[in-house]
Amino acid sequence: MDRRPVVQKLVRERDAYFTVSWSRLKKSDKYEIVRSVPSDAGIYELYYMDDKRKLCLFHVGKSWYGGLRNEIRLRTDAELESDPKRRVLLEEEECWYRWSLLSNSDDMADILFFYAQTYLPGSLKVEHSGRYERIFVKEQDADRIVTI
Image (cartoon, rainbow, N blue to C red; front, top):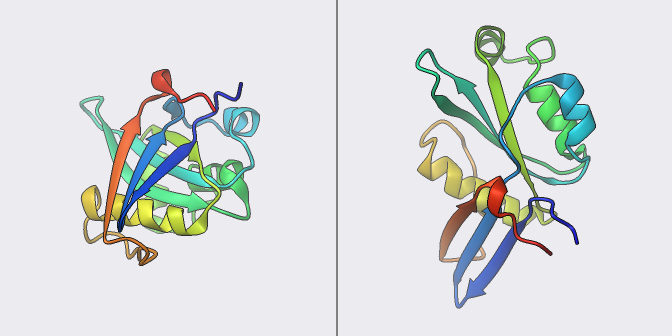
């Protein structure tokens, strides 16, 4: 049985219902990322820990060709980050990440559109695939990963 976190989809008429099963939230460490994150396509979220020890979402993304391992490694290392604001954030705050496997580019676009509109309005320019009238997303934490 495969117990890796994956995205599942159900389509009813013109609506899409996604269930995102996330990996465990982990503190960013380049060696741990190389050991534990797969080099497969998927989506991911990045958080920083604020002064009150609360995790704050600051980035959602997808990885297609390079795989999640490469993308998360690149996006969580201040030395590799090209955006000055994000570099400062990575240097000054603890960074955390989680991911889910997904191998359909249009589904990635739809989910990222939903997250951008819901959690980071105005901060990301993300287009949906145009296939569905409405997009719904339900999340499951790592303790309730669906077995496939």
